[in-house]
Image (cartoon, rainbow, N blue to C red; front, side, top):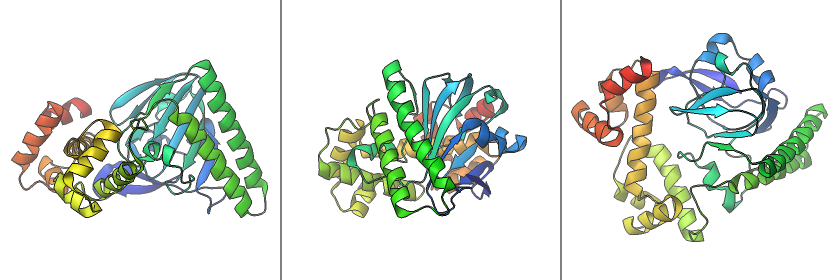
Length: 300
């Protein structure tokens, strides 16, 4: 991973891009927590990060409280964390110095195309932390060990071959399938068509949430009726499209309010609101707090 500088829309959030220091062309890295943190300066570790890749963290010893999108997760041996691209986290702050963990970092394009793991790879908020039972921990730890072993072999080769990359991709798929057994937003009851529609909706929402909050616009852009879109969203998450759109916008507003010094009016414009008063009403309705009060609480 590499810090790519301050995001233009969020100057206090470190935008972190994926870069494998061992094999630059490989979209996966298996690394120990202590090694990864040793690459970061103390200043970098204290900043909130917004990565463009997935992170799976399995705590193996020590304790820490790690934060993902305003939720503190108490991590101890057996805790599994999943951070999706675009989520804002603090995984490397000084309070985590006693933690040791196995990490797998991977780009959105690297995993195999398996429908069952698609909800897990969504950019929309979903389950972030699990405290694993002994049998769950054993299975996931064993799969991560296999992946890490093959990754170390890949780093010792003169060049990573297609066969090695394919094996790493399959091992990652096996790991993600084990994680789906822990419980996901998609309970598997949606039809194949609805799942495909929901995937396309998620992609469009990630691109267009600052442009439109109208569910009918999203339905039109992905080529279905609003009713069909709502059915796909309900099947996958239990919420209709409009609720998911508003939740996505509210979360991004919280990130900008908490982690930047942008004026509320500027945040309002960035999120597509015509007037700051409209943004204030929206934010209060979604979160139960005014933008100013939320910022004061988070920045203390």
